Each structure stands twice: as structure tokens, then as C-alpha cells.
Picture 1 (cartoon, one colour):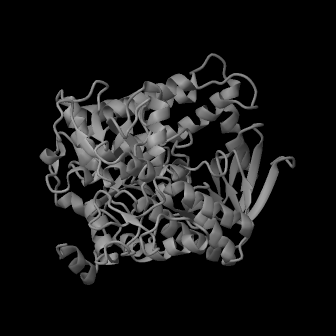
Picture 2 (cartoon, rainbow, N blue to C red):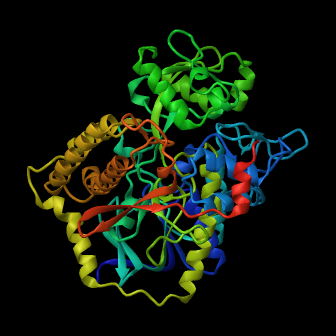
Length: 572
């Protein structure tokens, strides 16, 4: 290991600075740990900011009948009972406390007449449960957590990308990263690592996710030997912008439907009554996304291949007050005034229910010293996430991950890193510079997105999945010959070449798990297995690395205690 390698040492290193990462850092700091936060782009530019609708928590401020039991039941039903029941229980029980904490730290919320936090309706939730700030809730959350963390004193490493997790025997001991600006490597030594790196959206062509979402954390955990779970469950949000092409996929918050927005097809029919007559537009996301997709496929779609979402029947002032971001987004990007005319929307890859397998209480992965929270972790949401549950997930399990990582670091021995591992990781990262006239990373990325969008999308069938796996095999070979030009300074082609390795890993995990699950459940729809099978309801698919290959196995869902079974059996 060269002496010139920039090195930083912390008790706990948090990778990712969204809601989960910041909340984990705050909790680890409260344990007295020295904490470093690494983020791929700028602090404050996390995906949490895009979460517009609100934070789901059974505070009963608007609907007095709400409590954690109903929230638990809604989450389990939404996830089609594949959820880790203990995570769903802790989440429902602890969310209100986490929201109150945010409020104490300075978060501003919309208010009821008597001054309590206002809550709105959302798909799949029995009661009005989403605590919100207009349609800018995630932004307020990040602002609050960031201020709190900076004030408590964590070190932030911005525009820094992790390329590999490093181990000391069978435990995690650090990470090798590089500064995106100069391309210089930087080594982090730490006793515990929290992965809060978000999802995988950039493997799809149409996504609400921005450039950072390339599955880095899941792939790094997988490479290090940790288990992944539920990778077949990719959520397509029913409403993303579809026109003009430059804004395709940008999210149109579910809050539009929560505040009374109505979906219609090209013929002006309010089509949701065919798919879920009871909940209509506020059905769960998987149902609404498939409904829009089906309308388009059967020829009733709008001009640009979507559906109309209309809230113009509400007073203009109400719309501007409740949905300020949406009003400006459509005005500026599509020249549409949503107070007067409908929005054109269609499904967009939005969220990953699968991810790193963790324990409910501690958020620890199957690898000692490695923790994960937020979208990078699996378990809470089962086969389909309810809107608003992601923000409370970040708070509840971000806190638990930070707490457990801080406690783990207190007793762990100082980490030892093998020089050979560090050098091997550097060599692999620099290899594309040594090749001339090889594969262009942009071409490979485009081909990957087309394959995933067309063959492993909203509806899946065996022939498509087999074809996708064949294409992915070829792409893995192509990746070995990837070449980049120029120097390591400001080189986006090089950054993409490295991210492609992660994207290919997670894409294969998604396709293989989708092939293995021979039923339709939640966000996973098989045309050749359209029914939800009772036998599959009791199994999660676990993904683990064996040598250089992906190994999958089924594992039964843990048995739930009787008192929780009783809650699920109750009708609303």
C-alpha cells in the first residue's frame, strides 16, 4: 500500500447522505462515535428530497381512530405479507416518535386548525396518515437532519464514490473510494459501516431516480459476501411525467391523487373502477401502475402513451397551496397549468423493495460490522411499498442502524486492512484507462436500460427473462473490455464504467429472482403465472455470491407471533 494514499479513520463510516444516512450518523454521534459521511454527489442532493407526499406515521391527528396496529396491518397487506413482520411492527410503533423528534429539531409541517401536524390520505393507508409540508416533505426532512448532523459534528466527504468494501477476515473494516473531481483514491478505515446508498433506478430507461441511483451499495455488500433479498420487487410509480421527452420519468407525487386527482384514459373514462372499485385512485401503487400500463397497451392511452391525471376540478388556490412543486414543475417543464388542464402521466421506475438483508432490531447485514438502512435495505416493505412509508422507514431504521453501529464500534477491535486488497481494488478501478478502442460505457449503459425496461419491466414472462439473462451475460463480457479516454480528472465516462459493474450485478439479481418467483405478487407480475400462490407467500428469495456466480435460495418467512396475527385478521 503506497504511503501517499489519503486515509481517514472513523469508528463509523456512513455511505450515503439521504434521510437514512443522516439519521444513522446523528444516532452514532449520540453514542460518542467518530463519524464520517461519504456522499456520491453534494450534501443535500439526496433522493429523500424527491419524496414529496409525506411521512407515514400513525399520529391520529386527523383520524383519531388511527394507531400503530392499523399502520402495521396496512403495511403488511400492501407488502402482500412478504414483509419482515418485526420490521413492520417496529416501523409502525416508532414512526410517530421519530416525526416528533424531527419537529423538535426544527422541521416545519402543515398544521391542523388546532396546531397539530396535518396528515393527508395516501394509497393503501386506511386513515389520513401522511405528515407533510405541502408537497416538499423530503426536502424539509433533509434540511432538518443535515442541520442537526452538521451542528453535532460529523465529517462529510462530498463527491466521493466508494468502489469496494474492505474486510478484516469476515468483518467489514473499511472502504476504498475516489474523489470524483480529481480521480484520486482515498481509503477509509472504520470499525462499522452503514450503507444508505438508495436504489437501482438507473438500470431502467424510464425512472424517477437521478444519476446517483446505480445500486452501488447493494452491489458492494454483495461483493463483500452479504446477502441480498427480495430483488424481484421493483416498484414502478404509477405517475411519472411522459411528455416532453426530456422530462420523461420525473415523479408526479401521489399527493395529487391524495388531494383528489382523478385518472382518465384517452376516451375520458375514469378507468380505476375496473381495477379497484373500492379504493379507485388511492389503490396501492402496483395496482395503479398496472392499470395505466394495461389501458395504454389496449389502445386507450393518451397521445404520448400515458393516462390523464386531473385535479383541475379543485379550486386553483387550493391546488397551488397543496401542490406547489407540482404546479411549478408542470408549468416550467411541460407548459401545462395543472389548475386548468390535466397532466399526462405514466409508470416510472421509482423504488426498490429489495436490497441488503438486515436484522430488524439492529439493521445489521449478514456480514459483521456492516449495517444498512433505507432503500438499500430489504424487509420492511415486502412485495410492494406504500407511499409515505419510505420516509418513516429512513427515520426508524436509520436511527436503529446508527445506534447499533455505534455500539458495535465500541467493542470492535481496530480494523486491519490487507495492503493487497487495497491495491487490487485500485487496479480494477483503473483498468478501463489501459484499454484502447474497447467498449464505450455509454453504449453499454443504453443497452442495459433497454434490456431491463423491455424484458424485466412491469409485466414479466419466462421467455423475456431468459432473453434478458442472455443479454446480461453478454454485457458482463462486454464490461470486461470497457475503455475510457482522457485523464482521471472530471471523467464522467470513467465514473459510469465503474457504476456499470454495480448495475450489471443488481440487474442480474433482479432478473434471476424474477425468474425464480413463479407467481404474481405485489410489484412482481408474471404474465405466465398470473395468480398469487399461497406457497410463495411464505418464501423470500435470498441472493448471495458464490465464487464469481450469483446463487439464489428460497427461505421461509419467519413465523409471526399470535398477537400480531390477530391484528392482521381484524377488519378495518
